[in-house]
Image (cartoon, rainbow, N blue to C red; front, side, top):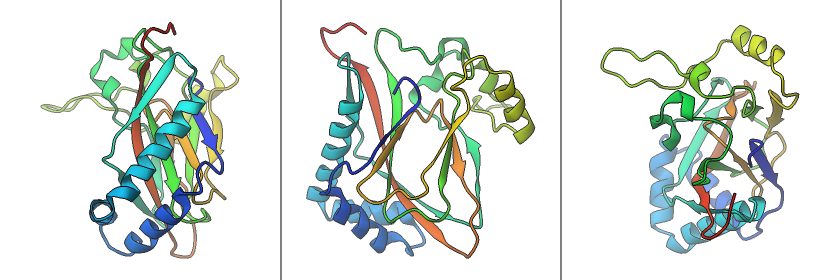
Length: 227
């Protein structure tokens, strides 16, 4: 996970009927977030199974020096292929720090914000695209947007030219490597550091919609273990 992301194929067959059912129930609801909230409120056992499977899979991908806890406040996304989403960084807990203190390296607390991404159907539309920019910048100052009056600073949306220029100048050969969720199926998970890995949604023809479930997690140093 220090390198940005981990793909976990065929994680847990127990998840397959849960996420498929969620997708069928909420795909055309018009408000996928509210629908998912109702779905899991009515099915606490399913919510517990998702949380248990995600935490177990994430912990198996982490070094022994780290542990993880995930939030039961699940997030769902219904993305239309005709309306691609800009490549961006998510707002995570570390954003409140000085940009010079936000680095890819782990501190003694072992804190990383990680998102688990789970498709509710085979992905053949509006694929999530990720660029592993974890090692692209030494700190977060380059990606900090200028604050507007009475608003806090947030992450910058880079233009294509800016992105290509930064990648071309990268010292680390792993910087800007790509991953696409095309072909992922229910039961699989993608974990990524959503405050460091730039991500967005691909354009797709044909009026299709892709739905996914996201679970946000935080790592910390395991008690009594050195990083």
